[in-house]
Image (cartoon, rainbow, N blue to C red; front, side, top):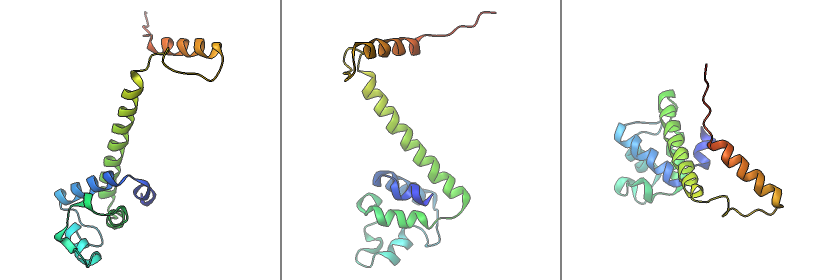
Amino acid sequence: MEEKIDTADKKVLADIVKLAQKRGLKGKLGDWKEFLDSHDKKFGANLSDPSKRPHELLATFLKSFSKEEDLKFFDNIMRHHENQYMLERLKDKSHESPEQVRFSGDFSAKILFRFVVNFLSWIIVVIK
């Protein structure tokens, strides 16, 4: 889980911290405000908005959790964000027609692409 936290987008980590706050979750270093009081001598908990904190600080807080249910909760949020990202990418690509897609290959690649697109759009009905 630590590797996932390290590589996650800052927005994702900020969302997880916000949800952890709402649920009252505490890691080894306490809840979010307790963590800030001990890890940020300059601002402490006065600036508690996770989205205004650096990635490293958010990651350190989230890595302080070890309960299995907390880690599963974090993993579910990360998967939700990944799914949202993939849906957005698919939506962006769905507006392209086969004619709009550029190939560096030859004409046969275009024919193959159209076949695959048409094949994937077919519906298979089993009649018994």
